[in-house]
Image (cartoon, rainbow, N blue to C red; front, side, top):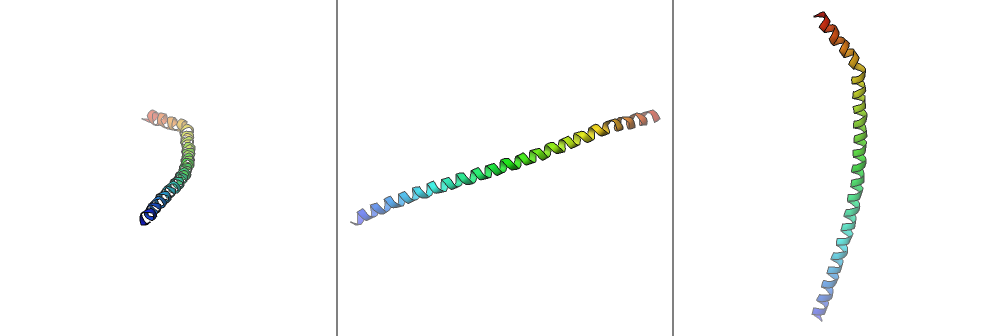
Length: 79
């Protein structure tokens, strides 16, 4: 009787361990998916901000290029 009870208890423990493992796995997968989506969103936001900054720098270079050339030519001609 005691052996039977021990066997039944062991089976129940194993069953519960499996259930806990499955639940933990599902929860971890859900958490990982959420974090992955947040990371993708954040990286997209950073990339967009970087592109805007790059365009701003390129525009500043383009608008100041002629002024810089004129300054260099003027300096060279004065020398």
